[in-house]
Length: 542
Image (cartoon, rainbow, N blue to C red):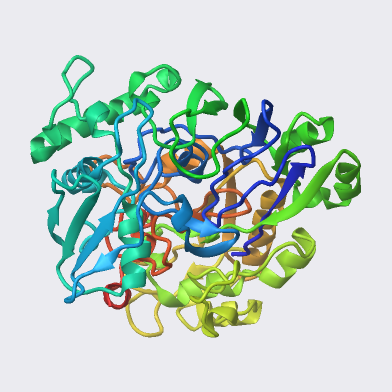
């Protein structure tokens, strides 16, 4: 699918807004003022506990809420560059043993907002929690972190140092960007408890205890109405503390954490994140001057001069991620279709990226040809990533379908006329007479995204694929987004899903090195569509 950077609008009355490649939003403005920031239309934070499952792991929760309060061990993104930013990181540059298997990290001297130092015990708390609860963690990939950890050391005598030994020596760039980057120290002295009435303890040091702690903290995070008042969420090491939150809309207000130990300390009275149901309502707020930072919808590009007259400055905001449509390999009815390589190739042949960029995005976009973003610039983009392996061609799509046993009815609906699992048959699990009828669920809130989906529907019809569009609220889309679980029927109904807004679907975080672990590896926590390929797994492991 086409990627398009969101166009960020900032009021000139405020000072520089630093945009990290990860999408986080450190804000600075005139001292004593309040700064308002527009959340992406239809996308608001609704889960505060950093150890999230795949359903709750939205960009809004990670970047717009959690990273404002709780700092990861390593911060990625530096003035638009896709690299580690040690100035904003809790950890100093790691060192490695001669064998390459053991990595040692020294922590900077940060404080939690209750005055307790951030130490290796807080890192140990995180590690114990994800080891015991890895099936509830969206970043988990079987065989990778934390499965590849063989031992850990958190010496009480040296509270600002810890070591982790892995099962073999790994590439240091990958180890930092895809393993150590996943660590978020958590306040053990405040959160290591199994109920509101239990004393803080060392429950995390046993698997059963860590499970009980998780269920308590997860339950507290499900109670959205207490986000601004619950003592648990008052203990932070980030620059902000949550002062107000609306469970109905996701409106969030932050005040400075006076004990913040990091650089670029807040020097404004408050920071407010404003929710919007659509790009139109957000743009209306911009035009009224009620927002300091917001987004200019692509279909309103001709309003640039009006915004400039109002004192706004316009800058592109390129997110480190890829936009794509998920196909449900586990759907009992349509999954057999998606498992056929020829069918996925035919679908891709019907995605006219150049036309979408030209006509729908008015040139404000760039194509996606693979799992590595071509923007922003990075050392991970190869020549293969810059060329389209499946350029738009209705004729090629029709040929792929007819060559594999489908009676093609352009403008109508194709049907399988040659069932079977042979090289020229429809494929295993596809019955004679099955019609190519699919439903695409996508998030509402963007007129441009609506137009892109309509263009996709029209192109599919040219090859006889009947695509029904089902626009839905972001929360509803994420509820559906799961591989099929036959016993409950959960995740078994959807065919195709396009989630996120037009700017991005999957942002590489905390797996900043784009090796695809979390979304393409078999059984990975964010492998929402149940994709599984032995060769892909082998390449990811390598």
